[in-house]
Image (cartoon, rainbow, N blue to C red; front, side, top):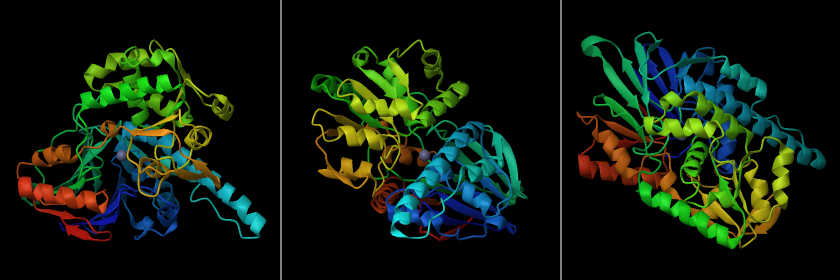
Length: 464
Ligand SMILES: [Zn+2]
């Protein structure tokens, strides 16, 4: 059985993961993610798919992050009628995330239309609506790690734990049977070994082809112990400055990790001196989903999480669901530690908190995740002296700390170790990384493992 894989997204960039597998005249899509970043990048989400959505037979989704799942509502609206195979936890998280993504799209369009009306321009429609997101959820077909599904005739899929966020999966695709059998392993986003909360990424020993992400292909994360010390230090120093601390955070994954760490190091980090606000209805819901899947956690992390979930830890944690509760934070000058989205400061409640705090020298912004080019978060990391928020120019006087060691992505060493697990050194294609990161990773893998590695080009194909 002939099969090819074509890279339609996250090729030479970090977001918009989308790869098309064709075999025996049928089609399976691996991921269908939203492009995130600056306005020009995000405008590409409105471009038609480079394939006929109605001709796709099935989707396999590696994990719930929106840059992997966020265009599913569009795919369904454009005529996709098949199942979306995903881990049960991914399914639970997507219910929250796709709904939220639709809400943001609708709000963006509303905002834009108010401006357009004043200028006498025609209104725009949202990229997709809550109704579209709901329709996409109707296609999910949940599975567990280790389950095998025949997704199209002759093509079977099995999920393994990728250790990146809850439910994140390495996708093992087998085409054909017996001696003609060929196996492709797609890493999705690869997590890190030895991190709190989740289990380590599974090592797979054999494949005929590997497609691997390379977000941090040119970097080494700080060690875990050093990272914890750094975070504790930043929080300790922030207390002395008597300002607020803003933590832009991804609602899924990073937020739960932070809550876990805060609970675990509560006294040591002086967290009893703060009022901690989880100012994100989506993060609150995602935290509840984590609680329903404690069985997927690292065994060491389970008891503490159960106590955290029961309210026995973090007595000063406030869960802000309503907009009123969020707005009330605008008046607080000191002592508030606010966790809010979006993780790259490209929207959401964190924008309001930045507006009210980032011009104060006593404020601290703690960046704990990847910041894509073109986002406000990236500008802060890069040392911007001023930022634009709702048409207003605001000085940046706050101190911005980047805690790189909390990343949920494997670094160069982690990626190398995971690929080295394939004993037969199969041909490797790199996706999901900025150009420089993938070039550095590629050179490193060639030098250290003599890996037959190439970097995916957008629209390029490989045979399987
Ligand atoms: Zn991810």
